[in-house]
Length: 118
Image 1: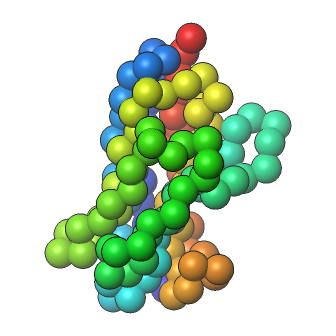
Image 2 (image 1 turned 90 degrees about the horizontal axis):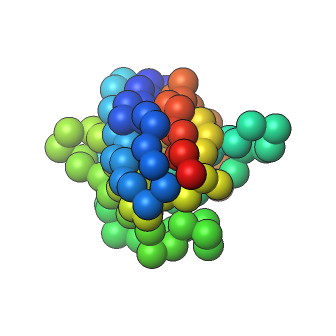
């Protein structure tokens, strides 16, 4: 099991930027694929982006492509989500997740709130 702690959420105006961080502990970080999910009020949790353990391959939700960038620093056991050109529809609780396979995210952080004002 790996423990995950997100940070970096906040309130920002539309068009602004935020950088989320997720610090991991308790496991071999480079062995895990890492992902960001989000949940908007009244909606189900959705996939946002993920990255392989090696940091090579990345995948994104279509609506965030070109605006969000996921990256990781295996030396710091941290994954990041750089979010630019933010829109009100990006509002939600953002969760960090880890899994030994991309289809099996079974370690979750507590979430960090992101609010985009119009």
